[in-house]
Length: 326
Image 1 (cartoon, rainbow, N blue to C red):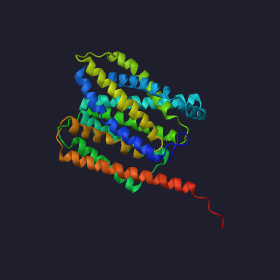
Image 2: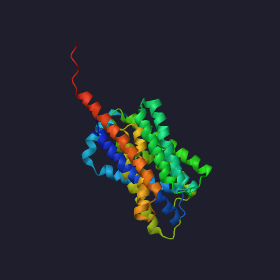
Image 3: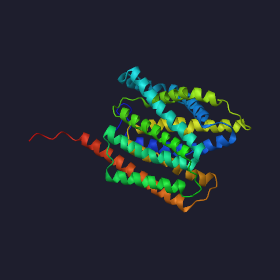
Image 4: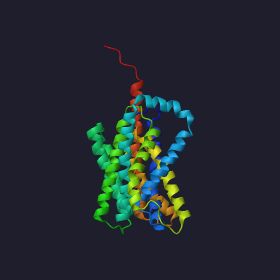
């Protein structure tokens, strides 16, 4: 239940995921501001997000020489070919996840895109984890997932005015599929305890950047805007907080926490977005906002507590001496 090579306990992994989910909650709103400020589309935004995120992650990796010994141990566990394949698979999943999500926001609106993407994600991940990883949610876990999804629907759609467009829904489902694959692969590889998550995150963003480059060139990599300073600040923010920081924490946490728990914790994204809208954008605090937030936070807290309790039980069992033969 923890990463031996990184010394990352489950409790810290849960904290990483909570921070990442809160940071992700600001990405959709920032993307909408980008669309209003310029003619930049979702593919070009994803490209610049990943390109700038790659530079930031590389700079952070080079600025921490004390971690070289740890990275060398992790590299010794896996050959270069295996590490390259992991980066390629994770990067493709990331490219589909975020590009399809931004396209869904553009096609059917932030509310519907968020509900479909984040609502389908836990279902797909729970099924995939059961079939490929043998992870069981159990009755309490299923109740927590159901409560979180109900809270998501109430929170995001409770205000009304959402427009459902089939093409946007399909894009959101594609985003959920990419997210699910990325999460399951991270958990699968994290179980061996020899993964360098800094390298995984950096490699994933590098692969995603390369994949998106030709599409960005076709759509016009340099956007037109009447306010270049504002656009630059928005893109810099998206690349820094909900990208480089959030994904570095996400990949580290997702390797040591059960996949279904990861997907539910990341439902903090719309909670963060709702709080931001009320606190900073002047939106009205409605009964739907309160009810949905309470449902989701309660479900996330319950599942996180169960995960941490299970980790403590595993550590206690490992610390117990073998029983004497009778």
